[in-house]
Length: 335
Image (cartoon, rainbow, N blue to C red; front, side, top):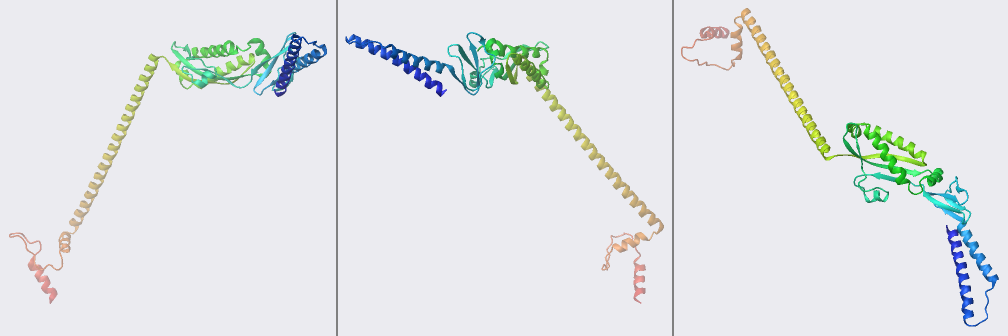
């Protein structure tokens, strides 16, 4: 690029020198001075100008991220492109057309951002298409692609700089519309969305490669619905959430009822066990008393404190023990 610029500047300097020399000769003649245009000077300056211009025109520098397509005025477009670097061409016979090989993005969306518009997105370019059941859905998508450097001459011959309007946009919209019409809203919005996206990407890639383009990726950004259908979906989701909430309440109530039933059964089993234990205890006591009637008297005496000397009983209350017998037993033991 620097060499071409220097040569262009040198050619311009030679042309300016040629003009300045002719003007100088004419001015001298206007002053009635004998001054002739020397052919040798004109030849030298003209040769320098033509040579510099030819060299400047014959040097082409292709920048990184682009490719050059050479068009020859006699044989047409050359099949071999010019890759980044400096190249020599036939001046005034060959012309170089530059095409970007960097990633480009085509976005179809309802509300594109400033960056997306800079990449070529159109205002409200959502693709609306009927689904298999006849409902309208809008697809927002982003397609990343690039020109295949090897196929740049084909792109030049087929599209020039109109490939976005002629190939990219129509191909994407046609294939997306085809797959939308073959699926239901639930498929597009639900679990089959990834599968549909991959199928669309494969078809776009095949079509692009036939025309000299590389598909880097295709992404479904969003699925839009008409206001009526969006409202119905919202109502359905609300109803589904309410049903799930009711199911949760029912399960919780069933669990609480089961807990109470288990708790009641536990209380019942504990009461039965306690009653059975008490009944068994009474049976054993009854059997013991039946075999030894004086056991009750013994247990009573055992509960009395050995320090008690006076027992006060209500009037007319029968003595459990015979005092005289006790006194007699005590006296007998004292003797």
